[in-house]
Image 1 (cartoon, rainbow, N blue to C red):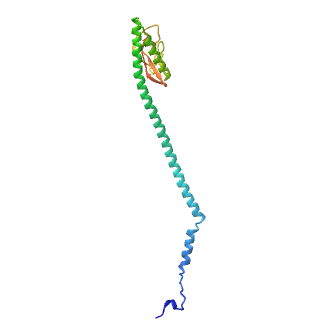
Image 2 (image 1 turned 45 degrees about the vertical axis):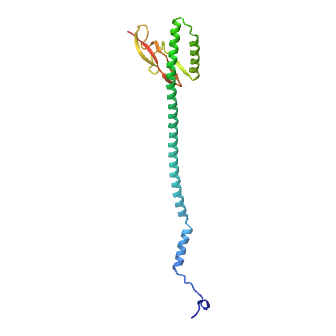
Image 3 (image 1 turned 90 degrees about the vertical axis):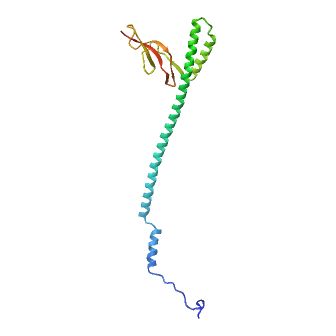
Length: 185
């Protein structure tokens, strides 16, 4: 038996002719042409453009949501403030009626006057202003007519009497003025 390690034969590896073709095909993959780079670049530009469009839409949606949320918060706060002011104005009206009754009966109203002065200061501090209506022309945005009086000396829809004072806060009508208006006739 002969030992392969002791053999004088030189091992030869046979290289196939197809190997040269495979190598040239591999080199094509390893060295892309200018056309392939351009195609890849165009594909990436398209993907980038699509991502930018999606991002623009998402940003617009976010801005719209942010504005809506801010508006909802402001409207909610304003609604609660208006609700509080309406309750406060009912109490304020009661104090004014009490002072007027006490004044008619010749009762000292210094305490009520002081309280009303503080309430007036509070209303002014928070920019709550009364709606002046007496002698004005009726405006349904500011007034609520609850009675009519025939007066040939006045123009139609002139306010002849304030029944309940109205108020404006932050350019919003908190409570319209209840009025009596004139009709010619």
